[in-house]
Length: 373
Image 1 (tube, rainbow, N blue to C red):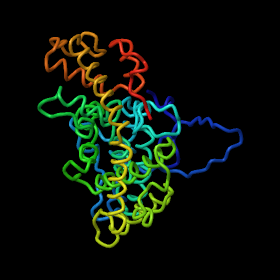
Image 2 (cartoon, one colour):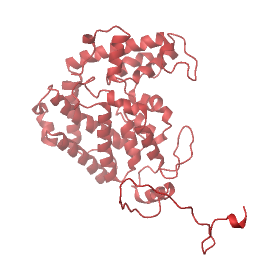
Image 3 (cartoon, rainbow, N blue to C red):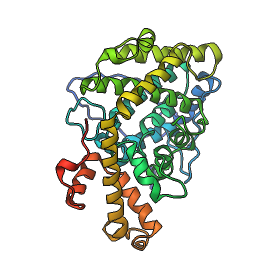
Image 4 (cartoon, one colour):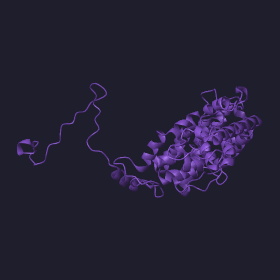
């Protein structure tokens, strides 16, 4: 390049930046922000100074099974959050039941609305406690991605096919369902250990999600049961109503404030009394009157038979699985490997898809399929 071809220079001797052409969405808009962006490193530095002493700090690309380069602007946990929201396992939660299988009432919760409510509760707690918000939200939104169709009945249905590990939706979600997303270790740990029957999560954000999950499902499952005509508000024991009231918003608010009070007073995630005992009694009531009522047990038994029938069908004919032969040899029909592959496929199904295959592949009559309420 000759001197005549060089771009013009400023008085300081620096090459001028090329003109930037910007299009705007609205005619005449004046959406002024100001020059300069915060890089990921700058944001990490701010968070290290601002977050609570025990909060989880995002660093670089995060600790992942498969190393990656860091994003110039997004925190590592924000990348996790984006991947979860764009993933198929998370989107399929919209078609998986919370309590009632394939409900006809569109106002009854599904797994995706449950996950959103858990995230709302968890982020509200984490914000006041000055914890890492993107990590909290990522764990909350992804925590139930390992659930199969028909809710917890799927765990009973699939466990016999995985004799060494069994099927625990929390563990399966972290180790199998979400594996392709290559999420951070802390995010997967929170998903794997959100259930109270599991070891405690390694981060305070994960522990917040564990409480938020229980608060959300106890309150909204009761609300859905009332909407479905199974219960009336006054069925809730008086000892619980006296502490948390009868409206879902009042109940959630009481439980959240009790968690925040525990953090404020002790520095540790927990829940103060009498709310903690009211939550335990509320949950026990839901088990007796909603989850384990005779009609629910009958529907769960049907769901287990249906899901096992689908697993057997695909395990005996693994070449029919959508991913068969893609990157790995097709396993022998009836083998443990074929059963594991079949479980992975069936566990990802939505309720309605599984019900439809029950009719199409297994010959179930529509009237014999498990129903929502």
